[in-house]
Length: 441
View 1 (cartoon, helix red, strand yellow):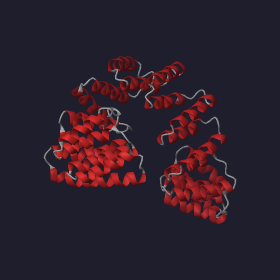
View 2 (tube, rainbow, N blue to C red):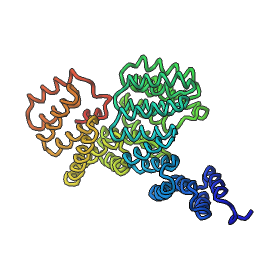
View 3 (cartoon, rainbow, N blue to C red):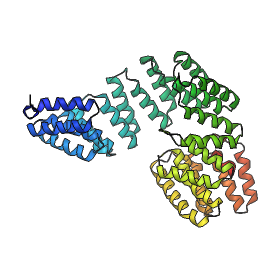
View 4 (spheres, rainbow, N blue to C red):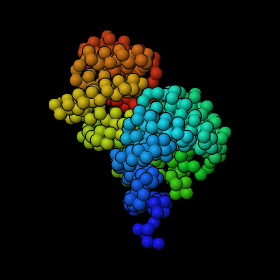
C-alpha cells in the first residue's frame, strides 16, 4: 500500500510504533500526515503533542492539544496531556485545572494524580498533595514509586512519622521494593536513632544482597556516626565487588572523602574530591560543597571561589548551591577582593530573602543571609534576621554562634561570651549545612 493512501488511523499507528522506538521526529511526521489525511481525527493532534512533549517543545504541544480540544472539549486524553504540558511548563494552577477536567471526563490515570500531587506541593497545598498521592496509590497499589513519591513529600515537610507509615505500607504491598529500607533509614538517621537505622539497613542488605544503594547507606551511616575506620574498611570491601554490584566509583570515592574529613585528613579529602568533581556523568553538588569546605580549611580561597562560581552558575536549587551563594563573596573577601565581593553579597542577600519568603522553613537561608550582613558590617540587619530565626527555631546553636561572632566584631566581648556560653548547651551544629563554616568563623 502506498503511503499516500494510508488512512489517518494507519498513519497514527505507524507513528506510534516509531514513537515507542524513540524515533520522535519520524513519528511526528506521520502524525502530521494523519492530520492532513483527516483533519477531524483528534488522535493525530494528541499524538503530535506527545511527540512534541518528548522533544521538549511544550508550547507547540499545547497548540496541538488546543486543536484537539476544539474538536472535543471533553476528550480525556487531550485534557490529560494538556495538564502534563502545563505541569512541565511550571504552570501548576493551569495544570490542575485541566487535570480536574480530565477527571470529570473519566480519566483515571494514576500518573494524572501523581502530577496533581506534585503540582499541589509546589503551590504549598500539602494536604491536597497527600490526597492526590493516595488516589494514585489506590488506583495502582502495587506501584512502589507512588509510595516513595508520597514518602519523599512527607519527608520534605517534616512529616517523618507519616512517611514511616507510608513506607510500612510500601513494604507490605511491594515486598520486592528495597526503597522502603532506604527511606526508612534516612528518616531514622535524621531523627538520630542510629541503632534503629543500622537495624533497618542490616535487614535490607540481608533481603537485597545485590542492592548497591543499601551498602552505600551503611557506609554513610558509619561516617554519620563518626566511625571512619569502619567506613573505610567497608569501602575497601565494596571496591573489590563494585562491578558485580554495579556500584558507582564516584559514590565510593565521595564516601571515602567524607571518611577522610571525619579523620581530619583534609588534604587527602581535598585531593580525592578534586577527582570526584571532574568525573563524567550525572551527579549532585555534594562533592563540590565538600571540596569548597576543604579549600576553606586549607585556606585555598582561590579554589573555593572557583568551585562556588561553578555551583552558582549551575543553580540546582539545592542546599549546596544555596551555600555557594555565600561562599563565593566570603572567599573573595578572604583574598582581599572586597569590592568584587560586595555585589555578590548583595545578590546573595536578595536571593535568601526571596527564598525564605516563599519557603520560611529553609533555616540555612536565614543563617547565610545573616552571615552576608555580618561580613558587610550591617550588624543591625544581621541581628534582625537572627532575632526572627530565634522565633522560628528557639535555642538553635548556629544562631547563637553567628550572634557571638557579630558581637566580637562589634567589640562587645561580654555579649559574645554570653552567646558562646549559651551555644555550648544547645544542639550541635556539626551535621548542619552551616557547620563547617561556623568552624571557620
